[in-house]
Length: 505
Image (tube, rainbow, N blue to C red):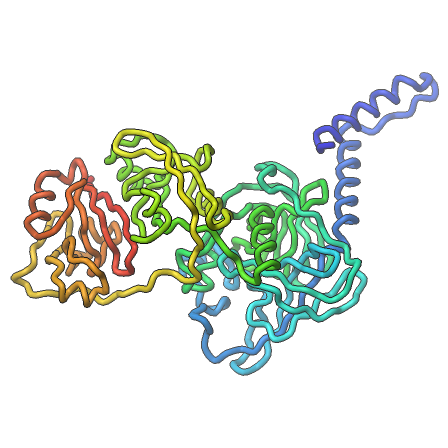
């Protein structure tokens, strides 16, 4: 029975009871609003009773290194300045402050039992680098836990305690939850165990770049598809469940947006459907095995990407632009092309890059997906056999490109200087092709700088014309005006490919 039905039924019962009492004995009934609040309180109490034995407190200890390990930033004092305005100084809130190198830091977080034999789902940042993990149950038992598997890309982890007949929570369907639905957050905020707070779902599909900000080595590799809620979430809530009014886990509380470091009305939870996939893979394999197409993509809802899509003749309001493909990737082998716009996946309209990346990641390797495409003014379908995502990203080479001045040409209107890619320069750049022209200098005040072009970027194509030489570059550039806009196909220094639309306003 939904909450709407519960409230409607309670009002109906109050009204019906009034009509059955004799007039002299008729009692003054509670106002319908009061009756509704009472019923809602009963639901909250029922959910708490359901979840109480499933929610656990997690205490950890770790050795403080002299410098951040694994390329990670210190959560307390090295979060980029632009994130400080949105996120707390410690966005996760579990690290003990003022720990000296070589000493021990204590932390506290939360988790939720997901099986009767002791598997627990929590956040990766709660147990990352921990030397000791102690789980405290609702009956005050304390048990040592071991790590089953971690997934830094989603900030999820599975740990296990020994025993049986534990009380696991039920995972719900996060896709069925919508903005405005009531939710309850459980955990140990500031160490206060078995705390429950209430709120609603404020938004879905949030991406705030919090995972990569704490671990720059994961830039471009993380998966964020957060549920935003105004249920109070504070330091220590991380790893605790977000629960619907049926007592089902629909999210895993992960981070907050705050200028103070404490609750400011904005919290983020990993959807349960994403968590279920990660959890099952970690338990089965000890790591997450994801599907992979090997393509660089961008959302056309972004203003710059929309202009690029329009330059291909696409005027739709949704879709994903294929910016580049690895030569031997599953996408390339199936016939995907740079400039294709993916508008659907298995017949379902695509709304965002997050939706697409998450769906492909959850697809088992060797399974086939059907992509709906827009290409050259036409729509078509393409079947692609999904591959296995590699463990690491492409190797990067950020050596700046330099060459003799007499081999260069200045495209002053765009704000770049370019030169041909010679075999020697290709070797220095770590690329296996001499196609295109390479940017040797970028005017910091020009259009190219505004769009993020840098020295070392290779221009492969200008508005559909492949570039092999400086002559090709000048000819292709001369056929377009900056007022109407110029589409550039770029290979960045790290090997990724993308489109850039240069237009003078």
